Image (cartoon, rainbow, N blue to C red; front, side):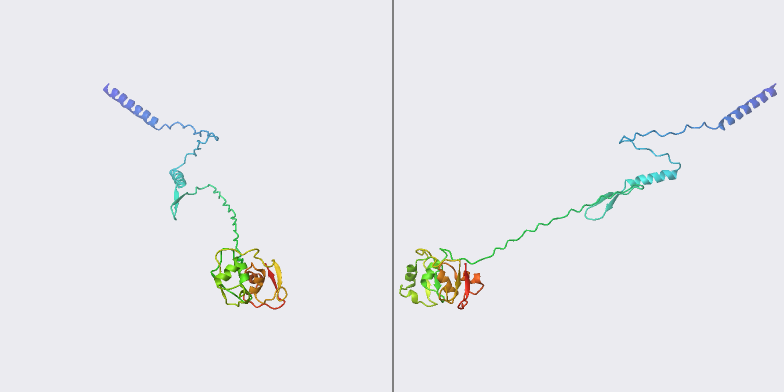
Length: 238
């Protein structure tokens, strides 16, 4: 009896063990197929997720590309400028640089041409030395002073006025004015040496017109103020 019970127990134990072993070798059920969640293309906040990598090498490649996309490169120079590194597969579009033409506006310089003018009233020298062809009366006209006062200050009489020679020093009054019209003859005009008036100096021509500077006549005709004029020579009087 005891032998039969022992055999039953051993058989039961072996059967239980066989069932357990068979259950451990049973394969797992097939997992459901993975489906991607659809992404709304109109959403600014949706980012499509790529397919799951098949192995660790794919994971490493994706990680490396993501890191490169966020790397900022430094450009040496004055100050540091950071520029995003290029991403594989992206197309870089160069922004055209438009060079606007620079229009230079030149400012024309206005050069004043200096011309000689008659000595204005009030700008009188203290003294004046007579030149060839000049006499006290025309000097009084030129400097707009009273001729009688000029002769008095110079210690001369009216009788001496017409006989004075070049080199005589006259004292010029600093007040008063010439009585009447300072111009003896009208100008602008054309002066012919030996015909209009008997003189061969620019100073004598200036005395003929009275209120004009000899230097103005010389400049207007392109000659020296001390030039000796020739008979028949024509001068333009401004």
